[in-house]
Length: 226
Image (cartoon, rainbow, N blue to C red):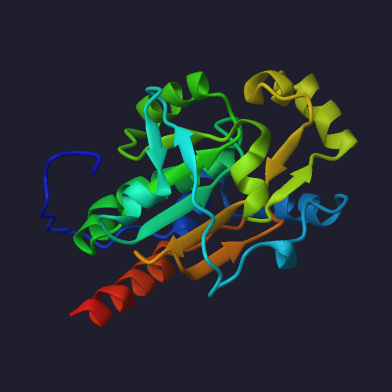
């Protein structure tokens, strides 16, 4: 477990990702980004990703401290929410990480843990942790080895690569990998038997699994155990 406390009493309803997104960017900027995504070359193919009912590939990755975290070890304590995100350079990813953090006590009350997986090198994780007060493991999937097993990997379009480089973001350096491959944003709920019970995958980086949907799935898993 990430920390020693075992019982949680959530007080407030966690905010929706969509609400946080609008607060940060505004509706017009969100629509501009979505139009930008739709005009871009193919940004991954969600139908190739793992779906509900599939067995989640087990993995062992290092967190921001260098400690090895295994999916099998997490599942020994209950269901796990596995979140793949592009990296700390992605503002939409950052909003989603904040939404997950605000929902943490609710997920823990339902016996679930959250683990965050990104291709970025682990030394880039600490600023994210401090910025968002994150209490989840941030796992470094250099080379997208795990994301590839989940069917999430695509190569960033050349035109976008040039734009990112012009803005000072070099994914080859951030990820320690010259491929410029990243995962589609994805969230999976894996039950303690290792079966995927919920899967959200989108080629649109502005779209993420809503917190309310994750909590509903976790509640259903809790009800089945009782």
